[in-house]
Amino acid sequence: MQRAPGGMTLRQKMAFSHLTIEFDDRVLTPRPWTAMQSQWAAELIPDAPVGRVLELCAGAGHIGLLAVSLSNRPLVCVDLNPAACELTERNAEVAGMRDDVEVHCGDLTQVVPSELFGVVIADPPWVPAAETARFPEDPLLAIDGGDDGLEVARLCLEVAAERVADGGHVLIQLGTSEQAHRLSSESCSTPLHLVEIRDGERGVVARFDRVA
Image (cartoon, rainbow, N blue to C red):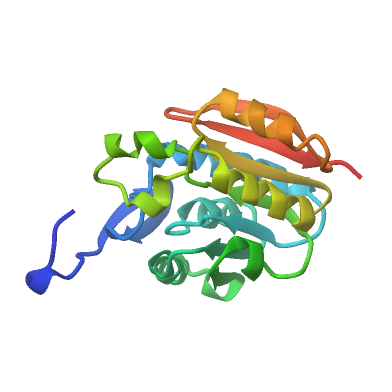
């Protein structure tokens, strides 16, 4: 990542499907292959229960923005990092969707609006803390998933279980199918049930549905 004169962060742009996404080194560089999660969400949204789409751990907002741009529903983005929230707002504006995108910055267990969502998208950090040194270019906040890589993912599923409507869908991006199955075994007491896992280029996306 280059720096502007004076050490300021230099914002960059990249194509993410048909969107132009701005980012800088305060957030994880958007990965093109994560568009699979957006496209899967877009497939589910038309028949999902009424409600906005919720994106947890939004980063630059690219996954959620692409999903709703393909399916025409309003979007709520949540991230702990103020820089991510700033960039999501900017990317929504560039995409011409600012009026349909609401951004909340803070702890995802506290700032998610009290409403039911038809679809929840989450891209939490999933790298075990002991392995984060393998990715020195990535911001630690964006990749550190705690001891087993699932600390933030568990919080995402807890929030999703409370906020997704009956018959709604949760798509969560993880590192491996083993992580997805572990989350599934831990969430057996919740109304979320693992339905499908799709392999991506460098990770997996797991679909959990809420059963009444």
